[in-house]
Amino acid sequence: MASERSPRRGLEELEESPCYQLWRASNAWQRTLRRSLDPLGLTHTQFIVLSITGRLARVESCVTQSMIHEAADLDENLTSQVVRSLQTKGLVDRGRHPEDRRAVSVVVTEEGQRMIEKGRAAIHASKEAFTAPVGDRKPELTDLLRSIADAAAS
Image (cartoon, rainbow, N blue to C red; front, side, top):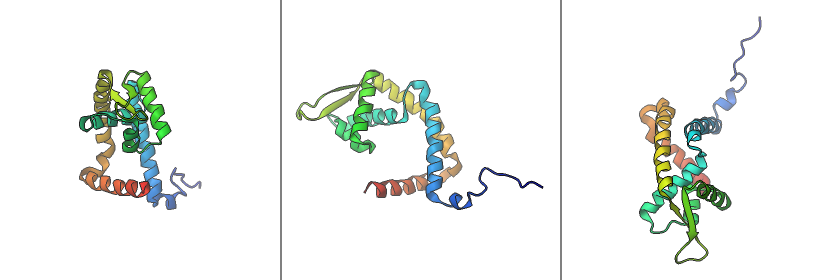
């Protein structure tokens, strides 16, 4: 009699690893985001950079590429590439900082602001469905993930 095969068979040790489960959840979330953002022509990284730029603009008189890189916790070169791609799409404008010639300022365009709204709407339903299995423990999950991310960034 042939033994029943399960895709998880032999992975029992991995199944108990929080890092493996975090990896699985992260991959599933990335797939979910791709389905939400692909129709808008944006990657998740592009949307994050665009959204962070818009949020920073609410509290800063001039948003710099360096501020975006720090807030998004992205490599400086990747941030530059993403900002350039958003500029090519007409979602942001780049220019010289008025007071620091070395700094690059980034401004969300009107089209970029519309895209932020569309992206948030597209992601909202996906986010609710994705986190539904944890129910009212979402704040606890958020705190745990923040602890991991903060410790890793130190």
